[in-house]
Image (tube, rainbow, N blue to C red):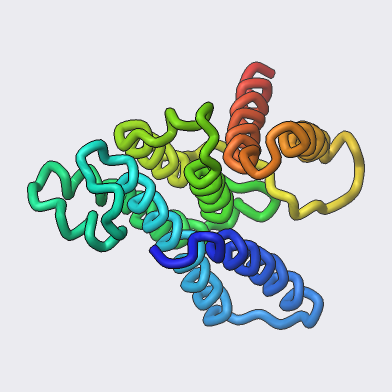
Length: 223
């Protein structure tokens, strides 16, 4: 791949645009079916295709039998057996399931205040966190450079995208503490993680988000 350092910046721009387009549309009181579809098409590129390709890159770089001096394209072209091709390209399941999730979201009528399943931007942020960890040269994070683990994570992400787990959003209807307690807990612990681990906390923040939503679901089910 080319300039890896540009990827997080471009994802941040995509996240900002994804937030602002809805905000501007609501402020101007304009909306249309085609706008909704174009928004999903843009999301599919930024939060569907891109994270799948990044995971393919991370898997390719973690293969123990590659020549470390080969480029990404060289590594892909050298995988000549069905087994190695499946190993390398399996993370594209994220792209496939992201497309399904976005299609489901478009026709859903009950995801206004919370999501069902992991939102595609959240899955992309998690994968960007893995990319940061890959480039950090931190020996404690070397366990992530394992193609089996990365493929398992790809499967988990894909399943979370299409899961029915309710996950809180940050589209706040009011500013009450009680109504937004989960968002506040998430924000506090996220800031602690970022203070402790800096950029290496990105993936941990999304993991925290998933864990808090699982706890929230268990608490609600127990009532």
